[in-house]
Length: 445
Image 1 (tube, rainbow, N blue to C red):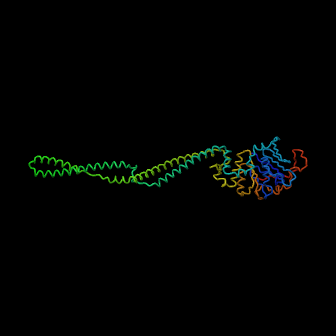
Image 2: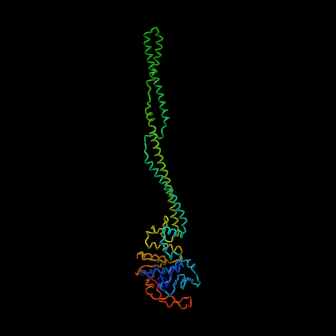
Image 3: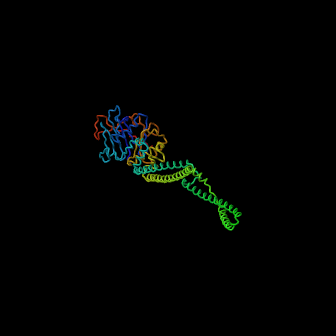
């Protein structure tokens, strides 16, 4: 990984003359009070490594007669310079060959010199950056679209199932009602059949009465007509036989009542209303059960898609253990961005920067005073463990600061001069610094 070995800045924004050798791995904290030139150091680095799009709107220090000067030595031997009236870029490789911004862009990650672009991005944008660099963005997007489509279908079916269940619950139920609606014509036909049988019974009763009358009459005739006794006795004997048969038939007769049918005919509408209510309730319960089964099937499908997403991220080459994406949001150790500690947020950002361009071994951080000492120490230890370099500013003059900037100088380097004053001849590359003061090297943090 390529890191910053040495930095010389003169007359850029609030910086008068600063010479720094950052720690190779870990955290170099540039401290000082507000308005002393801390952020100007980072702005100079960003301009030197990121190109003119990072050029400060007023690059030259106010009141300076000497143009801005910037000299950066990188761990791969490259020397990056900006000097002279136009502050043109010069990039020289270890072999003495000149290069330009394109050479720097090949290994300097934009987010490394503009980390706020990542830190201030939305949760979805952070997640998209991560997904793109690990190469699963499109696959995860397709799975999320599929999951949302199944989820929408399941939601609709769940609503229908709830409606059906609610409808079934509200329906009255009549356990004494028949299973099917009653036909009035069938009941009338049954009534007519019974009435016909009852009519036949009545005819038999009338026949009995008639025979009884004739029998009595003939008995009287026997008394008056003894002369016709033989005929009368024969007829009487026959009538006696007929009487026995008629009596026997009459004894077993039983009239059926049509009262229930007549009542049912009168109540047919009410009975059928109950039958239909029971049928509606049964159907609603059946429908609710069917929709619940569909709901459960879709739940299984959703879980399968979510498992695919989990497997996709589990098998991906993530820049930091514990990183993941869920519902379009970046998570670290199951915490969303706004729930992460400041140290964890910077770990995630630094790891993603490294993954974007593995050769870029440094990041620039401004306003680190927002982080408490425990988080600062934790982040510094993690940087050392990962072999990364961070140069950060902090409004402080405490022991955590690697260097202190005071009035545009590094404390202890006041008055140093890094380039020739105007009018002097440069025999070599166009600049020739006087005998420099002893360089200051930041201690490891």
